[in-house]
Image (cartoon, rainbow, N blue to C red; front, side):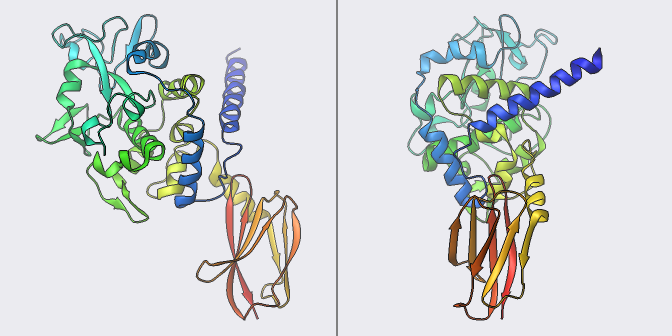
Amino acid sequence: MKRFFLLVWMLSASWLHAQVQAYYNDVDLSVTGNQLKDNLAVKIISTHDSLISYSQLWDVYIHTDSAGPGKVYLIYGWDDPDSDGDCHNDLTRDQADHGGSAANCDYNREHVFPRSLGNPNLGSTGPGSDAHHVRPSDVQLNSNRGNRKFIDDSGHAHAVGSDYWYPGDRWKGDVARIIMYLYLRYDQQCRPDSVGIGNPVASDPAMLDLFLQWNAQDPPSPVEDRRNDYLEGVQGNRNPFIDNPYLATLIWGGPTAQDRWNMAVESRALARSVRLWPNPAHNLVHIRSDIPLQEILLTDAGGRQLRSVRSSVSELELGTGDLPAGMYYIVLCSAKARVVKPLIIE
């Protein structure tokens, strides 16, 4: 019986992942770097078709952050309620106890990206009320965080010195994926380097290695998945880095994050399936793939595109007779993978 329920759960999980991936059917996921970043940004901006007001967030939290009947999860919290007599570090809170004061152990709305650090200020609309961003938090813990920038550390949430904030081992992945989402959704208004302390990524100085590390170290939780599913129905868009943290690795590099769609496996499978001959080539090169291709590119050694063929065929010939002898590259793109093969023309 246990094995039966495990099988049902596995099949349900597979179905849910398939449904999630359907949201990205019109997104070219075969690219990497800034092109993938731009593709995902277009998707989450174009599908964000319903704006939640700041006052509506209380009702949203009942669904997105539910911790059981009548309870909500509080970002940065870690302790069972009343276990140590300090309500301000509680992991959960009664849903009705919001909008009041720290003295009453209430919770309020935490801007993970402090409004004052946005350029311009995030306010209480747009990024300032985006439910993918604003999370319920204990009033006192929220005040303790203030507008401190994030910095790496360990343990529970706490201030680091007088200027910085560590969100806690439990929440650092959530924070990273929120910051990544905001950067794609609102661009320069929500630059990651405005809200954290770390080394900039070579390919994108606005992104910090801090958030890439947290994204890899702390994979998405069931709470994040539930938030994402519910908010697609309410706002229309999703947070891609919750759906698959590995997308951040494909865009900015850094430590390899969880690959929930097996995109790395797809790339290896595509690489194994491709045949390219003759190599070295003279007048033409023959290309064959067991996995359907969406686009085939021919570039020179410097990456400059010379040929582009968009086709669903799995076998074709590419003329090379007009090209000088030298090193070239064939770039093969399927729906979810991109493989580069060297080609010598004699």
